[in-house]
Image (tube, rainbow, N blue to C red):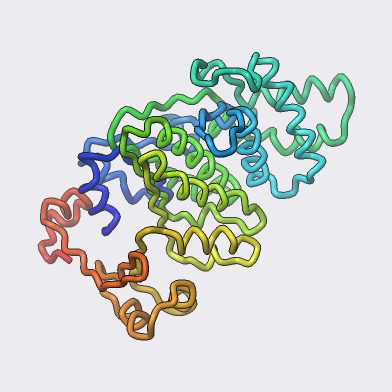
Length: 345
């Protein structure tokens, strides 16, 4: 409710993109005249082509867009197929080079001038590998073909195989992946990462426009064995201010961010956030919050005994106890049940 209150109040001045794995924002989005995009492979859903090079602005590293996108692809396929070895990933890199060359895309190409249909799609990748393997039998290519077939031309191809067909033309856009809950966790993580990369491309495009990304249920993305995903979220959080943007990370448990393999990125993301809100929590989750943010015993009790809409709000070293009390019109925009229920929080 607190986040939805923020969305309503920020909308007049801020373009907002929301990653919504639990279908929690569709009703609000409709009432605010925004756009909801199903990113789950359904017939009416949108496609974000992972092979379309994102025109990310990365002034600090000076790397070209294609090189940066190769890094994205490495992580994307690692999420999908954790069993891939370094040799197999290197082989995939070589195939990417050949694929983009075939489409006349190299490090000198001005990506901003290309249309969505100028980029390869996953079936192009698959057929190139198949052609190479027929010409010269290769054990690594055999494995890659078997692994990639479902997402390129098989049963899961409707999720990613195609040209990007969505357009961000409203102040509020919700990327809904809720119906992907039946899919394997790797697919959900890969799509979350794919949307995150696309969203950052939009947010960083024009520093004169105020923008915000809301990454809900962000723990879905976190995998201790693939630290690059959390590293990317931290990167966005550090670069956002430079682009007149901000990122709101929401999670039900910070434990996922504190695994020893990814603690460097997870704890940095959590502790360096400008503002933090701790709603009701207990057990290990509460202990993690207390230890990570050095809360007092009194603050711990406030979080433990918090009612709906109450939280400990932290900015810098200052902490206050907050109770969100929304106006009636806000509540009616957030959820249809509030039109009948007048016992507002």
